[in-house]
Image 1 (cartoon, rainbow, N blue to C red):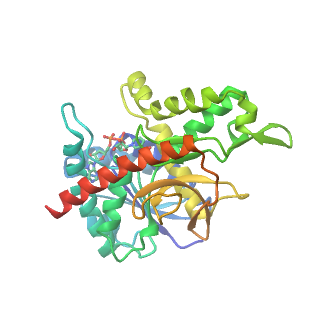
Image 2: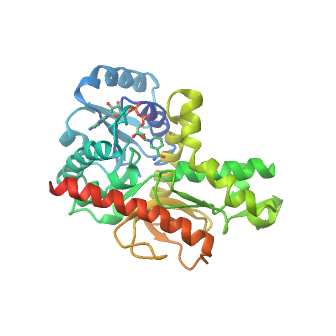
Length: 333
Ligand code: NAI
């Protein structure tokens, strides 16, 4: 892999990008031998700040970073790009209705979808981080009809990592001892963090179901779920800023697994376009457990869904359907 791979990061002057760019340029995502060209997209008023970010990237003297292209022009940002992190989005301001936020973002992701359609490589992998991430990813893919829909995804990996860390802390084990936690649905407070199929290595070589290790169904069905659902708000309350380091780490995890593949049959969660499995309406951008090989994800099928899970999975699908319908109305208007 010695040819330079071109990677785009949008919202490049923002908080998440500040951590994300460091990890990408260091080789955490595309591998330690993969030279990179980074295109950095932000809006025109941020070009001064972005110049500072470029100075710092240069000053890191990363061996893998061969070229940096800061720009406010989508054509420049997406031309010849093989992987894109769409982080930039319109933030929710005080007094703004959800609908206004959606409308502003539909415009951004429509325009970026069209640019990706025209200028990016056809096998581009697109990860949408900017909120509302699921619906933004859907819109982006809708306006990039020449790119397979499977190449668009949205990030629920931060929710997965949060869920995994909660369980590991509760059991006093390493974070990586917990496997196959699932995030279903929307990256919002209706998401369903599900550990019914998760396992934990409680002693060397001994792996058991999380439900058997925790031995507290009430906690796993209530407090655990709410903690993960509201973790983003808790970070904002404490830090006065939204999650950035952990969001950047999750974006790296997501794209690295997509690029290099998932190991040892493990599952990861990502928002992808529903093919109509698990009773989730076809065409919704919904988070599922997947395995990845040859840069292609496959949904883990056949998991038993009990009544408790069914209700939670449906509730988050209802919210996504509403968002999708609103977004499509805005597009048609
Ligand atoms: P930030 O406000 O620090 O940075 C966002 C950047 O995007 C700004 O520099 C802004 O100028 C830029 N931007 C706005 N419109 C743009 C456009 N049309 N093209 C290119 N750039 C544009 O925000 P932060 O903290 O970096 O978060 C970014 C997004 O990620 C937010 O929407 C946030 O809600 C979302 N997020 C998603 C998470 C997830 O798990 N999916 C987790 C945490 C944050």
